[in-house]
Length: 338
Ligand SMILES: *Cc1c(COP(=O)(O)O)cnc(C)c1O
Ligand code: SF4
Image (cartoon, rainbow, N blue to C red; front, side, top):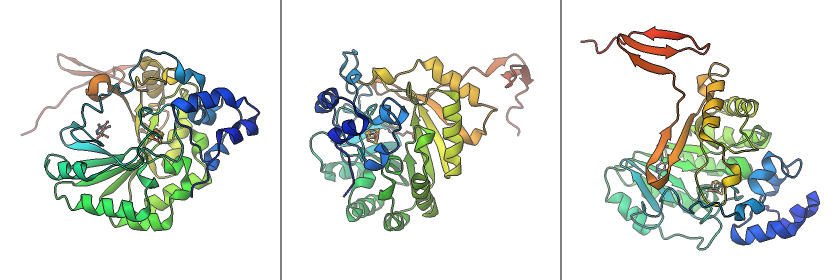
Protein backbone atom coordinates (compact mmCIF):
# COMPACT_ATOMS: atom_id res chain seq x y z
CA UNK A 1 0.00 0.00 0.00
CA UNK A 2 1.06 3.56 -0.47
CA UNK A 3 3.14 5.10 2.24
CA UNK A 4 1.30 8.22 3.37
CA UNK A 5 1.75 10.71 6.16
CA UNK A 6 -0.96 12.00 8.52
CA UNK A 7 -1.48 15.68 9.21
CA UNK A 8 -0.45 15.04 12.84
CA UNK A 9 2.87 13.57 11.68
CA UNK A 10 3.43 16.36 9.23
CA UNK A 11 2.76 19.15 11.73
CA UNK A 12 4.95 17.45 14.33
CA UNK A 13 7.77 17.14 11.80
CA UNK A 14 7.72 20.87 11.06
CA UNK A 15 6.55 22.12 14.45
CA UNK A 16 3.38 23.80 13.19
CA UNK A 17 -0.07 23.93 14.76
CA UNK A 18 -2.14 21.04 13.33
CA UNK A 19 -5.51 22.58 14.24
CA UNK A 20 -5.97 24.98 11.30
CA UNK A 21 -4.70 22.35 8.89
CA UNK A 22 -7.28 19.87 10.19
CA UNK A 23 -10.01 22.47 9.89
CA UNK A 24 -9.23 22.91 6.20
CA UNK A 25 -8.83 19.17 5.61
CA UNK A 26 -12.35 18.61 6.96
CA UNK A 27 -13.61 20.57 3.94
CA UNK A 28 -11.00 19.60 1.33
CA UNK A 29 -9.38 16.21 2.02
CA UNK A 30 -5.69 15.87 2.78
CA UNK A 31 -3.47 13.11 1.49
CA UNK A 32 0.29 13.14 1.14
CA UNK A 33 2.90 10.50 0.35
CA UNK A 34 6.02 10.26 2.50
CA UNK A 35 8.02 10.56 -0.67
CA UNK A 36 6.52 13.96 -1.57
CA UNK A 37 6.57 15.16 2.06
CA UNK A 38 10.33 14.48 2.10
CA UNK A 39 10.75 17.07 -0.66
CA UNK A 40 9.53 19.82 1.70
CA UNK A 41 12.44 21.81 3.09
CA UNK A 42 10.48 24.34 5.15
CA UNK A 43 6.85 25.33 5.80
CA UNK A 44 5.59 27.61 3.05
CA UNK A 45 8.10 26.49 0.42
CA UNK A 46 6.95 25.56 -3.12
CA UNK A 47 6.39 21.90 -2.25
CA UNK A 48 4.59 22.69 1.02
CA UNK A 49 2.27 25.16 -0.69
CA UNK A 50 1.18 22.53 -3.20
CA UNK A 51 0.23 19.85 -0.70
CA UNK A 52 -0.42 21.28 2.78
CA UNK A 53 -3.86 22.71 3.65
CA UNK A 54 -4.01 26.48 4.03
CA UNK A 55 -6.74 28.52 5.75
CA UNK A 56 -6.90 30.64 2.58
CA UNK A 57 -8.76 27.70 0.97
CA UNK A 58 -11.76 28.51 3.16
CA UNK A 59 -11.87 32.20 2.18
CA UNK A 60 -15.10 33.44 0.61
CA UNK A 61 -13.59 34.16 -2.78
CA UNK A 62 -16.86 34.35 -4.71
CA UNK A 63 -15.77 31.60 -7.09
CA UNK A 64 -17.67 28.53 -8.22
CA UNK A 65 -16.84 24.94 -7.33
CA UNK A 66 -17.16 23.89 -11.00
CA UNK A 67 -16.45 27.00 -13.11
CA UNK A 68 -15.69 24.95 -16.23
CA UNK A 69 -19.20 23.47 -16.12
CA UNK A 70 -17.79 19.96 -16.22
CA UNK A 71 -20.94 18.58 -14.66
CA UNK A 72 -23.23 20.22 -17.22
CA UNK A 73 -20.96 18.86 -19.96
CA UNK A 74 -21.24 15.30 -18.65
CA UNK A 75 -23.75 13.34 -20.75
CA UNK A 76 -23.35 10.45 -18.30
CA UNK A 77 -21.70 10.46 -14.86
CA UNK A 78 -17.90 10.49 -14.99
CA UNK A 79 -17.56 11.48 -18.65
CA UNK A 80 -16.90 15.07 -19.77
CA UNK A 81 -17.59 15.69 -23.44
CA UNK A 82 -16.77 19.31 -24.25
CA UNK A 83 -14.90 19.13 -27.56
CA UNK A 84 -16.32 17.24 -30.54
CA UNK A 85 -13.53 14.71 -31.04
CA UNK A 86 -12.26 14.10 -27.50
CA UNK A 87 -13.59 13.38 -24.05
CA UNK A 88 -12.40 12.91 -20.47
CA UNK A 89 -13.24 9.77 -18.50
CA UNK A 90 -12.98 10.30 -14.75
CA UNK A 91 -11.52 7.12 -13.31
CA UNK A 92 -11.85 7.71 -9.57
CA UNK A 93 -11.69 10.41 -6.90
CA UNK A 94 -8.34 9.25 -5.56
CA UNK A 95 -4.81 10.58 -6.03
CA UNK A 96 -1.58 9.67 -4.26
CA UNK A 97 -1.56 13.21 -2.84
CA UNK A 98 -4.24 15.89 -3.04
CA UNK A 99 -3.05 19.13 -4.58
CA UNK A 100 -4.41 22.17 -2.82
CA UNK A 101 -4.91 23.98 -6.15
CA UNK A 102 -6.80 21.12 -7.83
CA UNK A 103 -9.44 22.21 -10.35
CA UNK A 104 -11.56 19.24 -9.18
CA UNK A 105 -11.29 20.18 -5.52
CA UNK A 106 -15.04 19.69 -5.36
CA UNK A 107 -14.64 15.94 -5.77
CA UNK A 108 -11.10 14.62 -5.22
CA UNK A 109 -10.84 12.58 -2.07
CA UNK A 110 -14.60 12.80 -1.50
CA UNK A 111 -17.39 10.26 -1.64
CA UNK A 112 -17.57 7.22 -3.82
CA UNK A 113 -14.25 5.67 -4.61
CA UNK A 114 -15.58 3.49 -7.38
CA UNK A 115 -17.44 4.81 -10.36
CA UNK A 116 -19.74 2.68 -12.44
CA UNK A 117 -18.04 3.01 -15.78
CA UNK A 118 -20.54 1.10 -17.90
CA UNK A 119 -22.74 4.06 -18.92
CA UNK A 120 -19.64 6.07 -19.90
CA UNK A 121 -18.24 3.20 -21.96
CA UNK A 122 -21.62 2.71 -23.65
CA UNK A 123 -21.74 6.43 -24.47
CA UNK A 124 -18.21 6.29 -25.93
CA UNK A 125 -19.07 3.26 -28.04
CA UNK A 126 -22.18 5.04 -29.36
CA UNK A 127 -20.38 8.32 -30.16
CA UNK A 128 -18.15 7.77 -33.21
CA UNK A 129 -16.87 11.35 -33.39
CA UNK A 130 -14.81 10.78 -30.21
CA UNK A 131 -11.38 9.63 -31.36
CA UNK A 132 -9.22 10.71 -28.39
CA UNK A 133 -10.02 9.72 -24.81
CA UNK A 134 -8.32 11.17 -21.72
CA UNK A 135 -8.32 9.13 -18.54
CA UNK A 136 -8.24 11.46 -15.57
CA UNK A 137 -9.87 11.87 -12.21
CA UNK A 138 -8.36 11.20 -9.76
CA UNK A 139 -5.29 9.31 -10.86
CA UNK A 140 -5.78 6.36 -13.24
CA UNK A 141 -2.43 4.84 -12.21
CA UNK A 142 -3.78 4.23 -8.69
CA UNK A 143 -6.10 1.54 -10.05
CA UNK A 144 -5.07 -2.06 -9.44
CA UNK A 145 -3.01 -3.25 -12.40
CA UNK A 146 -5.54 -5.80 -13.65
CA UNK A 147 -8.44 -3.35 -13.35
CA UNK A 148 -6.60 -0.77 -15.46
CA UNK A 149 -5.62 -3.46 -17.94
CA UNK A 150 -9.25 -4.56 -18.29
CA UNK A 151 -10.46 -1.00 -18.67
CA UNK A 152 -7.90 -0.24 -21.40
CA UNK A 153 -8.80 -3.49 -23.15
CA UNK A 154 -12.51 -2.61 -23.13
CA UNK A 155 -11.83 0.91 -24.38
CA UNK A 156 -9.57 -0.28 -27.16
CA UNK A 157 -12.29 -2.55 -28.48
CA UNK A 158 -14.15 0.64 -29.47
CA UNK A 159 -12.95 0.99 -33.07
CA UNK A 160 -13.22 4.79 -33.38
CA UNK A 161 -11.12 5.49 -30.23
CA UNK A 162 -7.79 6.12 -31.96
CA UNK A 163 -5.69 7.16 -28.98
CA UNK A 164 -5.89 7.08 -25.20
CA UNK A 165 -4.16 9.62 -22.98
CA UNK A 166 -3.55 9.02 -19.28
CA UNK A 167 -3.29 12.01 -16.96
CA UNK A 168 -1.29 11.07 -13.86
CA UNK A 169 0.63 12.87 -11.16
CA UNK A 170 2.07 9.59 -9.86
CA UNK A 171 5.53 10.24 -11.39
CA UNK A 172 5.63 13.41 -9.24
CA UNK A 173 4.05 12.41 -5.94
CA UNK A 174 4.48 8.61 -5.91
CA UNK A 175 7.12 7.51 -8.45
CA UNK A 176 7.28 4.05 -6.81
CA UNK A 177 3.92 3.34 -8.42
CA UNK A 178 5.60 3.33 -11.84
CA UNK A 179 6.85 -0.25 -11.85
CA UNK A 180 8.26 -2.38 -14.68
CA UNK A 181 5.09 -4.54 -14.45
CA UNK A 182 2.86 -1.50 -14.90
CA UNK A 183 4.91 -0.30 -17.86
CA UNK A 184 4.88 -3.74 -19.46
CA UNK A 185 1.09 -3.82 -19.18
CA UNK A 186 0.75 -0.28 -20.57
CA UNK A 187 3.03 -1.05 -23.52
CA UNK A 188 0.43 -3.59 -24.66
CA UNK A 189 -2.09 -0.78 -25.16
CA UNK A 190 -0.54 1.51 -27.74
CA UNK A 191 -1.15 4.14 -29.02
CA UNK A 192 -1.07 5.39 -25.43
CA UNK A 193 0.13 8.81 -24.28
CA UNK A 194 0.72 10.06 -20.76
CA UNK A 195 0.63 13.60 -19.45
CA UNK A 196 2.07 14.16 -16.03
CA UNK A 197 2.10 17.20 -13.78
CA UNK A 198 5.41 18.59 -12.54
CA UNK A 199 5.18 22.14 -11.17
CA UNK A 200 8.61 22.80 -9.69
CA UNK A 201 12.22 21.77 -10.49
CA UNK A 202 12.63 20.33 -6.98
CA UNK A 203 10.18 17.62 -8.06
CA UNK A 204 12.67 16.41 -10.70
CA UNK A 205 14.33 13.85 -8.40
CA UNK A 206 16.24 10.70 -9.33
CA UNK A 207 13.12 8.66 -8.45
CA UNK A 208 10.95 10.82 -10.71
CA UNK A 209 13.56 10.48 -13.47
CA UNK A 210 13.49 6.73 -13.09
CA UNK A 211 9.69 6.62 -13.26
CA UNK A 212 9.64 8.75 -16.43
CA UNK A 213 12.44 6.66 -17.92
CA UNK A 214 10.46 3.45 -17.41
CA UNK A 215 7.39 4.97 -19.05
CA UNK A 216 9.39 6.39 -21.95
CA UNK A 217 11.16 3.05 -22.43
CA UNK A 218 7.71 1.48 -22.70
CA UNK A 219 7.22 3.64 -25.78
CA UNK A 220 4.78 6.06 -24.16
CA UNK A 221 5.23 9.68 -25.33
CA UNK A 222 5.33 11.82 -22.19
CA UNK A 223 3.97 15.34 -21.85
CA UNK A 224 3.67 17.64 -18.88
CA UNK A 225 0.97 20.04 -17.76
CA UNK A 226 2.13 22.67 -15.30
CA UNK A 227 -0.22 24.96 -13.41
CA UNK A 228 1.09 28.48 -12.94
CA UNK A 229 0.97 28.95 -9.16
CA UNK A 230 1.70 32.09 -7.19
CA UNK A 231 4.55 31.51 -4.76
CA UNK A 232 5.41 28.17 -6.34
CA UNK A 233 6.55 28.65 -9.92
CA UNK A 234 5.54 32.17 -11.07
CA UNK A 235 9.15 32.98 -11.72
CA UNK A 236 11.28 32.90 -14.86
CA UNK A 237 14.27 31.03 -13.36
CA UNK A 238 12.03 28.39 -11.86
CA UNK A 239 10.10 27.80 -15.08
CA UNK A 240 13.26 27.68 -17.22
CA UNK A 241 14.78 25.10 -14.87
CA UNK A 242 11.57 23.11 -14.73
CA UNK A 243 10.97 22.97 -18.49
CA UNK A 244 14.56 22.22 -19.51
CA UNK A 245 14.81 19.68 -16.67
CA UNK A 246 11.69 17.94 -17.98
CA UNK A 247 13.27 17.50 -21.41
CA UNK A 248 16.18 15.75 -19.72
CA UNK A 249 13.62 13.32 -18.28
CA UNK A 250 12.22 12.81 -21.82
CA UNK A 251 9.07 14.71 -20.89
CA UNK A 252 7.86 17.39 -23.28
CA UNK A 253 6.27 20.49 -21.69
CA UNK A 254 2.75 20.61 -23.17
CA UNK A 255 0.59 23.13 -21.33
CA UNK A 256 1.18 25.87 -18.80
CA UNK A 257 -2.24 26.47 -17.29
CA UNK A 258 -3.54 29.75 -16.01
CA UNK A 259 -5.17 28.80 -12.67
CA UNK A 260 -8.84 28.05 -13.10
CA UNK A 261 -11.37 30.18 -11.22
CA UNK A 262 -12.11 27.40 -8.76
CA UNK A 263 -13.39 28.14 -5.25
CA UNK A 264 -10.71 27.78 -2.60
CA UNK A 265 -7.72 28.43 -4.86
CA UNK A 266 -7.60 32.24 -5.11
CA UNK A 267 -4.33 32.45 -3.17
CA UNK A 268 -2.58 30.63 -6.02
CA UNK A 269 -3.84 32.80 -8.86
CA UNK A 270 -1.64 35.12 -10.94
CA UNK A 271 -2.86 37.81 -13.37
CA UNK A 272 -3.08 36.71 -17.01
CA UNK A 273 -0.41 39.21 -18.00
CA UNK A 274 2.06 37.56 -15.62
CA UNK A 275 1.94 34.20 -17.40
CA UNK A 276 2.19 35.88 -20.79
CA UNK A 277 5.24 37.87 -19.74
CA UNK A 278 6.88 34.80 -18.23
CA UNK A 279 6.43 32.74 -21.39
CA UNK A 280 7.51 35.63 -23.62
CA UNK A 281 10.68 35.89 -21.49
CA UNK A 282 11.46 32.22 -22.08
CA UNK A 283 11.39 32.58 -25.88
CA UNK A 284 14.88 32.65 -27.26
CA UNK A 285 16.28 31.90 -23.84
CA UNK A 286 15.38 28.20 -23.96
CA UNK A 287 14.53 25.91 -26.87
CA UNK A 288 11.03 25.94 -28.28
CA UNK A 289 10.96 22.28 -27.20
CA UNK A 290 10.99 23.52 -23.61
CA UNK A 291 8.16 26.03 -23.99
CA UNK A 292 4.61 24.84 -23.35
CA UNK A 293 1.46 26.54 -24.65
CA UNK A 294 0.15 28.98 -22.08
CA UNK A 295 -3.59 28.27 -21.92
CA UNK A 296 -6.58 29.58 -20.06
CA UNK A 297 -9.59 27.33 -19.67
CA UNK A 298 -12.48 29.73 -20.14
CA UNK A 299 -15.30 29.64 -17.60
CA UNK A 300 -18.60 28.13 -18.61
CA UNK A 301 -17.03 25.24 -20.52
CA UNK A 302 -15.94 27.37 -23.46
CA UNK A 303 -12.67 25.53 -23.68
CA UNK A 304 -8.94 26.07 -23.50
CA UNK A 305 -7.50 28.98 -25.45
CA UNK A 306 -3.80 29.68 -26.01
CA UNK A 307 -2.56 33.07 -24.82
CA UNK A 308 0.06 34.55 -27.09
CA UNK A 309 1.97 37.74 -26.78
CA UNK A 310 1.28 39.95 -29.79
CA UNK A 311 4.15 38.99 -32.11
CA UNK A 312 2.64 39.19 -35.59
CA UNK A 313 0.32 41.71 -37.18
CA UNK A 314 -1.03 41.69 -40.73
CA UNK A 315 -0.17 44.70 -42.88
CA UNK A 316 -0.86 45.51 -46.53
CA UNK A 317 2.01 43.58 -48.11
CA UNK A 318 2.51 40.79 -45.56
CA UNK A 319 3.00 40.38 -41.85
CA UNK A 320 5.02 42.45 -39.45
CA UNK A 321 6.66 39.95 -37.16
CA UNK A 322 8.42 40.98 -33.99
CA UNK A 323 11.84 39.43 -33.27
CA UNK A 324 13.14 38.57 -29.81
CA UNK A 325 15.11 41.80 -29.88
CA UNK A 326 11.91 43.75 -30.53
CA UNK A 327 12.62 44.62 -34.18
CA UNK A 328 9.71 44.57 -36.66
CA UNK A 329 10.46 42.38 -39.66
CA UNK A 330 8.26 42.26 -42.76
CA UNK A 331 7.41 38.69 -43.70
CA UNK A 332 5.81 38.40 -47.14
CA UNK A 333 3.25 35.63 -47.00
CA UNK A 334 3.92 33.58 -50.12
CA UNK A 335 0.32 32.38 -50.19
CA UNK A 336 -0.75 29.10 -51.76
CA UNK A 337 1.48 27.79 -54.54
CA UNK A 338 -0.33 26.03 -57.31
C1 LIG B 1 -8.27 19.78 -21.60
C2 LIG B 1 -9.42 18.99 -21.99
C3 LIG B 1 -9.36 18.10 -23.08
C4 LIG B 1 -8.09 17.88 -23.88
O1 LIG B 1 -7.67 19.02 -24.52
P1 LIG B 1 -6.36 19.01 -25.43
O2 LIG B 1 -6.21 20.43 -25.80
O3 LIG B 1 -6.65 18.11 -26.58
O4 LIG B 1 -5.24 18.48 -24.60
C5 LIG B 1 -10.49 17.41 -23.43
N1 LIG B 1 -11.65 17.58 -22.76
C6 LIG B 1 -11.75 18.43 -21.72
C7 LIG B 1 -13.05 18.57 -21.04
C8 LIG B 1 -10.64 19.15 -21.30
O5 LIG B 1 -10.73 19.97 -20.24
S1 SF4 C 1 -3.14 14.88 -8.91
FE1 SF4 C 1 -4.43 16.09 -10.32
S2 SF4 C 1 -6.54 15.38 -9.88
FE2 SF4 C 1 -5.26 14.73 -8.16
S3 SF4 C 1 -5.45 16.38 -6.65
FE3 SF4 C 1 -3.62 16.81 -7.90
S4 SF4 C 1 -4.34 18.19 -9.52
FE4 SF4 C 1 -6.16 17.19 -8.62
